[in-house]
Image (cartoon, rainbow, N blue to C red; front, side, top):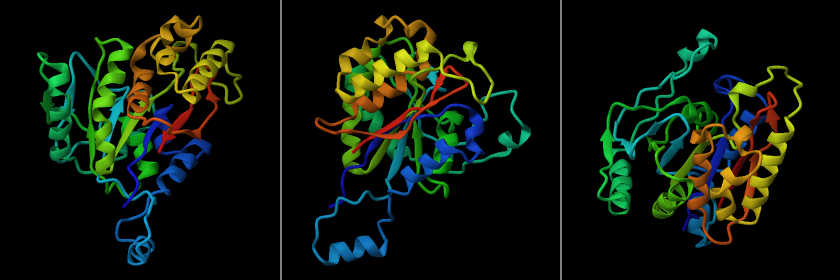
Length: 282
């Protein structure tokens, strides 16, 4: 039996990471290489030898919670052929020529809706074909799954809800991991565009470092309450001036299973006020 799919938070940083090869994108690609095809000779051999396999297999689908889709209430993309959304400005034209033609999965989208319907009632969950795959998703996934051969479904962030609520939503979704659904959160622990220093050798701001250290230590200690109460940290106003880039982390932590240790995928800062920390469980 294959292991349950992991769950992973990506610090996605600049949209330019979609077309660049750097330490962060290389680590994303390395994360993708941990998966093997269900039809691989390696997995077939293990099965023929009747050996229990904990080898991660290609997921049946990816569920992405991205900082770049916020709504009032929850929305789920049901589009079987989601478009590549170029939701940014001021970047080189070649970035907007990138397409990530992964299929959607209406079946997974409906499963997500079914899992959450009772929890959010009486509020409705909107199912929409108008959304596609935004850059918070495809800028990372094109390195993790460069063949775009894994179906992608996006779920929006209900920006009207408190942090702890998002953790509870994720706990309802945790079961998806048993069905080889890779749950992805994409944002940044520290994301302050107003304080960016565009110098390549910019040192991280002290408030970036202090808040990042607080959150990473809480992740390592599985202290979800401390993370959900992030706004009480003295450096939160600097590190998280708006919540949309921080909240995707909570979905990954809520989908974490007891005793799953964090595995750092990427780490470090860019432009003084962006944390590129990424972490996986399972």
